[in-house]
Image 1 (cartoon, rainbow, N blue to C red):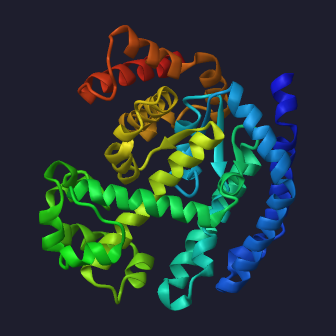
Image 2: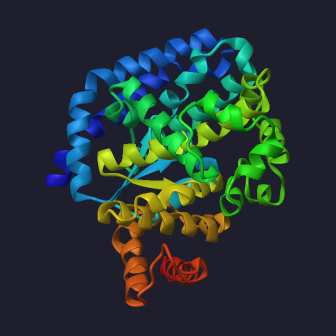
Image 3: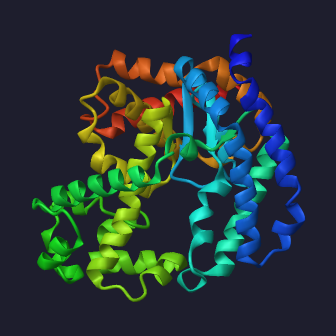
Length: 370
């Protein structure tokens, strides 16, 4: 009863939000106008702003007594690809930061800096996935304005992310840099930049997927820009140094934003995207001395490995509501962590193959039991 009362307003907000989004279904489904969609996003902002204080309170209370995972490094859940099964496998509550609010910055940019058709198409996909989630699985996932709950001061956010980025850059080059001008005095080309990066770090400095590890920096960035039209347009007139810093900063800022947001709200990041996870791996050793952060990161690593080692077709013949119910009762995360502790495995030091074997085995037992 207590848990139901705690999230009373959160639950009510889900139905209210669903009704709001339905009002714009026809407009969003046929719109080719950035201004129209920007207007919808503004209405969404107003909707959440009115509820922000009570939602913030309920989320804080909920997260303090439950294991709450936050979808991180992805805009929307992607139900069509069975991603909702993965997300419900571990933890008590599963939270999605409003996908449509995440896309707001794109609709504030000048049309000549982004691919308008691609941006609108992506917004429509995010909208359709959100509607599907609210229609079918409203009691299983919580959509909340997580970013707005924490980042009330946008200037503070940008300053924090910028400071951390330059510390990161200084670390991977073993030289102190505080801004672009200082960096640009040392490096002007991709080749110079690559030669300056610590070799062990460069292997994990990927932009598209693990295949990047076999490429030089110029090839990695070229491959990334070929797949990311908006970033390609944004960086079209930039120098090689500016392009490197812009792309790398966007990825470092993303993972830092994820960590700060989750720590501040007592949430656990659920990361399924390889590039985001690689950047987490690059910076996580800065934080593991803190016991709370160490535990949070351990759970994130376990969830990522589970996602990577479980085939989507494993869920094809399983009813989702039944799967969700079994997941709640089975407590798979606790079983995996207990096994890791029994074997005295330090997840941050050991060969990940040992952890992977435990996760695969425990997941197989769970699926066989369904």
